[in-house]
Length: 425
Image (cartoon, rainbow, N blue to C red):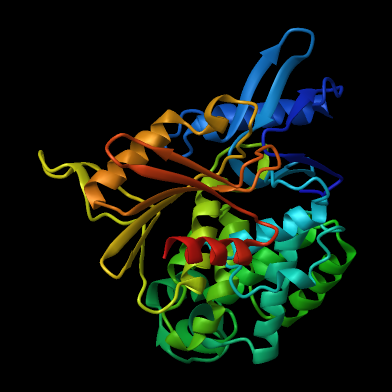
């Protein structure tokens, strides 16, 4: 793969046309558009990706084909070097692209499946770096820490035709290679060296990123770090080396770096994608990211005497047959004999649509939560929207189910959560 030659950035629900920009859509080179279309079609049959959530392909008279971003946010790197960056749609008229990236990265830090937790997002040049370059910098910084601590060596099995005898003689290989050359012996022995699977994976990832990055600092630092791995082989089988990682507990500090290796070498983000024209797809479902982020903020702010459960599975809609139609509220707060249920919804509401855009199915869901949990409070949590005039919306049924719709300002999320907790607890 060549170094990235072009980055295209769109927000959620933004899109591309084939060739020329039209009607607010960005123009994407025809070959790149066709490759991205093939990527969409390759993932349209997989149950795991739920194709309707990934990228949509449609046609419009006078425009032609349109590719539109949906609920997945992150980046797609094409084999021709093109980077497609999809940023979350966060409310804020004066919010810059860099500020949007910072908020998104802070949200990603709460995910269990990726290695962002201890990364200092505020130190990044988010206005100048694409998401790809930011992710590359995160990995490079992690490897730099490892090299300062000292790379771990291990006894590794070696099979070789040596000039002297050591270890164990391999008779069949010795006959095959040394029937004439009697001055050598084919042996197997253990050698203490750096060529362990974890180091091979890191070296292979650095090499891949050196060919991928277009940022001078990332390139320079990747080249510098590769010099620490001179006596390490490149991984011949990535899957095999991943399966051999962490047999030695003394290298647990490698865990973050190896997690990044999985991201870059196997494309592991939050789910798996396929496509021959795609070099790397790091895409995250914003519904899950928002849910994880809000849960982490609640954990930070809840006080003594409040019990918090996330993704609770205590009840099902029906007890027979065998707990059918499980209920799984995002947040259950219990305090002083009271129960409050909250669900997060990644959607920007608007005064200009029916019921502000709150779906009927979500309200059915909240009604069921209220009845099953006998909850004193029920709340739907949405990101703040500039298109909604009210800061608090309430719906009350004739059988005393009270659903509150509240908003979390992602530009000042700690204050939003603290205020909400003070009102419900």
